[in-house]
Amino acid sequence: MEKNKDHRQLGIEMDLFFIDPFVGKGFPIWLPNGLILKNKIRDFIIEQEKKYNFELVETPVIGSVELYKKSGHYDHYKENIFPIMKLDEGEEFVLRPMACPHHIMIYKHKLRSYKNLPIRLAEQVYQFRYESSGGLLGLERVRAMNLTDSHIFLRDDQIEQEIENAFNIVKSTLEKFNINIDYIELALHDPKDKEKYHQDDEKWRLAEQSLKNFLENKNIKYISKIGEAAFYGPKIDIQIKTKLNHIITLSTIQLDFVLPEKFDIFYVDKNLNKKRPIMIHRGLIGTYERFISVLLEQTQGDFPLWLAPIQVAVVPVSKYQSNYANEIYNSLIDNNIRAILDDTEERLSNKIRILNERKVKIQLIVGENEERDGKVSCRLLGKKANKIVVLKDILNLFK
Ligand SMILES: [Zn+2]
Image (cartoon, rainbow, N blue to C red; front, side):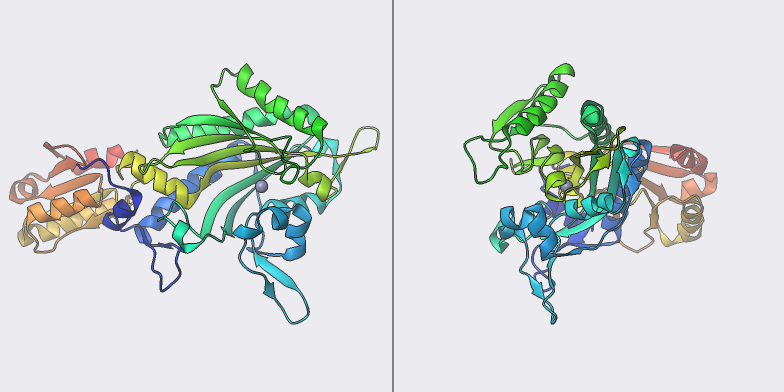
């Protein structure tokens, strides 16, 4: 198997997605197999978030310009926001570049007590980012993207615990997908850059120190980078190297003391005083688009069985085994296995070549002998030898 295909080529061979300039440059279209893959990842993540006590919410893909002016995104990220849509009565909207302000407004919607914190919100977000057409690259750089975005609202005394939780959920998720981390970056602010960074030395010191303490207490190796912090706070970025040697941030944990102030959110403490919460922005696997591009390149499309868009293919050697092949195919489908049946008249070697290209994990060949014995000849992706087994052995693989 060729080892160095980039995700765009694998996406075509595995029939996962395409991008057509007639529809829009930078706007991927997910095909049935691609959507299966995306949904499997999403289901796993929702399950993970449940374990870590996140609550799911849903907010609109369009936000008022005022909302993003208030958050500061409009000033800091204007070049990455699509142009404003003006309505008749003077209302102004943008396609949202991120969901943070929406989640802050959910927090603000109710009076919160110190007992309610931490509040952990998560959403399957659809958002937009204006990129020049020259900067677009397959799924790695797109203009519309899905992600699981989360925001945690907490008290000062909960920082350490919540950073640890955020880090644990990131770590266990990346482990589940066998993602190779290139390095961990601690992104700090540059005190000399008065334009980008909110001016509050004491708060920056506290936030940066908490992230540093966490990494050092846990003996996690990291590289510090000054000037890489978000405008609202420092962050821990999990960095990955792509096949084209681009370094990209996959997961991120960002401490934010600026947005809570800008939106004037608070909770009521024991003594009925108003207190300002801190916020953590937690990106688990980045966008699904980028994550899938990394996953494709790191695995070359050879996913674990639970993730493979097509798990099993049934291939009769000739038309005489059609009925038997159909029977097997139907039992697989009845057992909720993602199977296909290839009973075309194509040559067997050709069929197998295409199944390999599509990264079908289990290929069941049925010829005259297999039918007579009530068995199947099983070939696993990437393995040369076939094994003669009964269907029950295959079904057991899925238990
Ligand atoms: Zn955010």
